[in-house]
Image 1: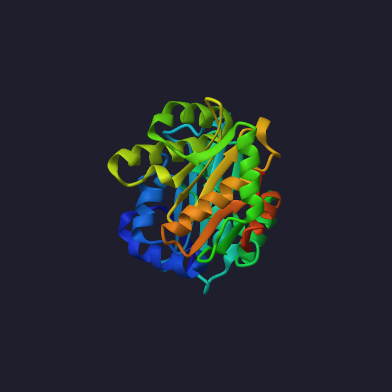
Image 2: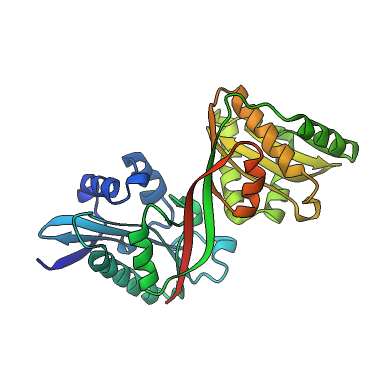
Amino acid sequence: MPLSLAPYSDSVRDELLALWAVALPLDAITEETLETRVLLDENFDPQTFLLAFSDGDLVGFVLGIHAKRMPLGDADPEGDRCWITALGVDPNHEIKEIGGLLLSEVEKKFKSLGKCECRASGYPPGYFTPGIDIHAYKGYLDLFTMRGYEAYHEALSMDAPITLFAVPGKTVELQQNLKADGIDIRFYRRSDLVKFMEFLEKSMPSDWVRVERRNLRNIAEGGFHPEQVMVVTKGDDIIGYCQFEGSHFGPFGVSDAFQGKGIGTVLLARTLERMRQEGYHDAWVMWTDDLAAKVYGKFGFKETRRFALLKKTL
């Protein structure tokens, strides 16, 4: 039976969620996640969320995203990028045939919209994973490679048990030395808001600014609290920060001018300490690199997944 393609429709929502679970078993999503990260995203476009059918049965999907309504700042500086954040094929069917057709069609749609570069990676406002899991989804990785996508970065996820976590003595001493140099590390205060946003907008990726703006709004509504954010100050200036949401650690960053002083190490340790105090037994970070992994490793984090980030000129 020949394959047919159609834009996403809510009429096949249940079938899609079931297919997603078997096609991408490490990354199955709930109906709530589908709504919040995909369907309610400002840039959702059903015309680039394609479904593949065979004899009336849903056998594949590709989720393509572009800046349809909301600009993406430094993630899409020229407005000519697009993303594929998920692609799945029924395990009983051929990935290359169905996946190839889906990719070909979504690329055509992107080109018709004037997009020049397609990335199989984390679209900032609503990604599921940083890229394609190198070990778990080799078949999909081979498909993208065969179709001309090239790796431009590797990312890794890490996890750590924190039930028995205590800030090491060397880290306590490091924090004392930083304080003697006028660098203080403490919880966020609501009176920090304007300076904190100025720091984020000047020093951090635009998506991190968006995430923190949302969290700070939630403080007033009771869904987030100041002790979930640590800030670093030098005099009246904020020069670094770190946050957590549930057991998810991060993001965190330090101004370029103050890197290499061990500030990140103290931020990491004090944030993990606070997470343990709030009753979390584990901490995880979805997206980091091999350089930062060395710092995480000092506090018990181990690599759990590794992803390839791919791109292709259309």
